[in-house]
Length: 476
Ligand SMILES: Cc1cc2nc3c(=O)[nH]c(=O)nc-3n(C[C@H](O)[C@H](O)[C@H](O)COP(=O)(O)OP(=O)(O)OC[C@H]3O[C@@H](n4cnc5c(N)ncnc54)[C@H](O)[C@@H]3O)c2cc1C
Ligand code: SF4
Image 1 (spheres, rainbow, N blue to C red):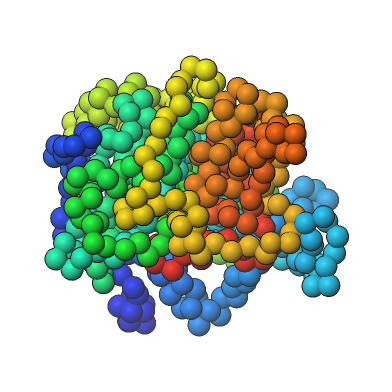
Image 2 (image 1 turned 45 degrees about the vertical axis):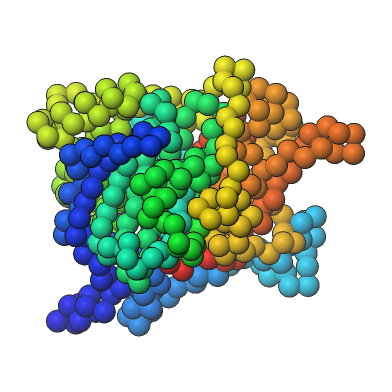
């Protein structure tokens, strides 16, 4: 009864009422059979739901420390994880301690569960340290970047619960991705473009592709007369079943998108993230009360619907390695005829950072100028993301080798970080001698993690910034 009462208060109000799937050319739309099956689902703002859940959790006695990011993993002398450490606060750009300096704190526990979302910075360290992919012969993870806006549109065009997904334009047939348009409540529409990060052309600019997308006649007519309320970007996992690492390490486990439980054909990961958290909690309970091992979490996962669902969907994403039309054909067969029972598992192609071609194989892409009505420049969008970082702190985007941008990325790949970053954190600007040098505007960062994934040399390490710095989403 108590749970039902809580559930009824949750900001989950708009049921899906229609579900469409279109293939787009530059000027036209073609309706396709809709594979998403969103009836029974709700269109929500995840940031509003998690904020609401945070209050409920605190009422139940859970302690939440929102202003502190976990900056390091703590180990005991036997290499077991014993907790996390928050990073020091009040360090200036040059590394000196400011008046506000405070040491980070150590949060220790009998078990540590990591739930940092896609490409978690600590989770990736743990996966690599304990060889958690090798342990179960998992493939590398693959990713996409989602760029999104929430609009307030004209009342007459608003259809609460209407859901649309598209494939095709503005992306070419070699670039996997598509859009989503979700009508929420209060005249709000969530609209975004997701682009797989294994795209080859270093001149491709995901932000500009999204701006272009909004000019499609079918989308333009929806947005015209509306205003943008918020902008944001985040990567998502696309590796699916074949990329799930062994999710248990000495002293804890990995849950949600940090372990890669997103269902790619559904483009959904909140259900699997929540379920994996619940299974990890059950496993933790048995460890703490009965002294069993956290290995039971892996057993619980394999017996759960997460495993079944992701296994069924395993060939969907790699099918698109053959191009858009073969991908649609294979994934259609899988979905409608074989229902995940094909007797093989397709492999993913190259890791995303290796997929980028050198610039000389492509011609630069000319993107239209933003019109300020449907499309916007990056500074305008950044303002709408409410992103905020303490300016005087060391950059949280660290270059493993500071010479690589000018020696490799710029001459070989035409400086792709200046395009794939949806916040223009990376800019090549001339020094006093007119030589282009990489400038990192870390304060703009949206924490999407695309640079950690896509840099051709894997030279960029995303680390947590000071305290609660980052985007301030309220309706995303
Ligand atoms: C554009 C886009 C559209 C999507 N659409 C849908 C959809 O329609 N339906 C759906 O179900 N799913 C959707 N997803 C996927 C969904 O957002 C994720 O699957 C889900 O949020 C994963 O939950 P999580 O708890 O694992 O991670 P997250 O929701 O990413 O939460 C992780 C949290 O940990 C914080 N964090 C990370 N590192 C640290 C650290 N070191 N210290 C402290 N805090 C840290 C992050 O700031 C974040 O708040 C979408 C994703 C994207 C990018
Ligand atoms: S700096 Fe990296 S993590 Fe930050 S917004 Fe740009 S690509 Fe995303």
